[in-house]
Image (cartoon, rainbow, N blue to C red; front, side, top):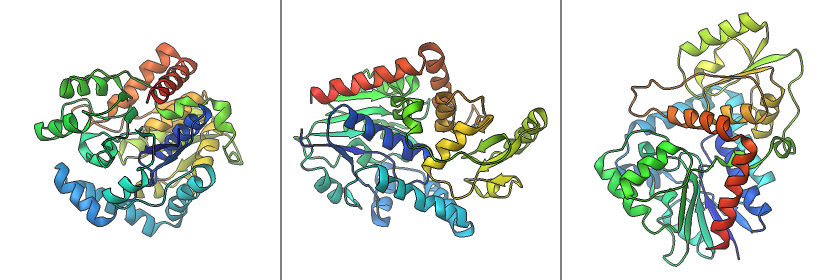
Amino acid sequence: MAGIGIITFLHNDNFGSALQAYALQRTVRELGYECFHLDYQPDRAEKIRNLLASGNNPKLILEGIRKREVRADQSGARRKSEAIPAFYQRRMRLSPPCRNRRELREAGRNCDLLLCGSDQIWNPVWLNPAYFLTFADNDIPKAAYAASLGVSRLPKAAKIRKIRRWTRDFRAISIREQEGADLLEQMTGRKAPVMPDPVCLLSAEEWNEIAGKEPDGEPYLLCYFIGSNPDYRDRVRTLQQETGLRVLVLPVTAESYRSGYELLDGAGPEDFLSAVRGASMFCTDSFHGLVFGTLYGIRTELIRRYREDDPESKNSRVDHFRRLAAEKGMAELRTAGREWLKDVIQNS
């Protein structure tokens, strides 16, 4: 094969997104195939065009503004934002930046297979046709590895019609959560196997190959929160009182910067790995935080980020992973994911 082009979330300042992208590319290479990520960085016109065409909620723009405000106010947030693309440059192969559909088509034109996944690339809340490979030339095979819908309820009819149309010509599809596979079948009639998130495709020993230096000092309770639930602070205070551990925070939100605890500020993906590995206890609302805590065998306290009655709740992701990890174990998940990928690539 000349090469496999992969597309996923790369530029949302998120450790989990960066590390799952790395894991998928590394795994494909370990299977013996050349590959690279399509470096999708949509410009403003592309973002607005997609927002209108996909029927997404304009509040997504506000979420982007809040992230920019944190970067503007905190030098550590800016260092983290710079550390993630620097990680890609060190560890991965990327195409030139693709700002729109035309540039995506050009970057993927000579691929033997286009692969989308993983992360919440198919979440109906922020639906984007690029992550369904709609830019691809018709003669290029398409596959999805562990694509996540993130939600547990059917979207509106207009979005169902789009998802049905955009997945029609996929050669192979696997989904990350059983709830998502059930929804996909309801929307399209297509049954898809459930495969683990790409970070599960590498062992703890393989992750240690790129992990940084563990934080110095006394044993610590590591906190990593993507959301801003006010209950987080109370829970951390309780855990600190119960354990007597020093609290170390990987800050994301404005609230976490104001927590009053010691900050592991400006960390990159390698630092995230070593911070989780070295923790005596880990408290998080993050899906990938939970997965890495499990991989490293760290006592992990998961705080649910969403109310169960929230129609946009993404709690199904963590519930499914907990069930799967308990039933099968990480080694079995790793084998299943690698075998699925190998079979799809060989038959494309």
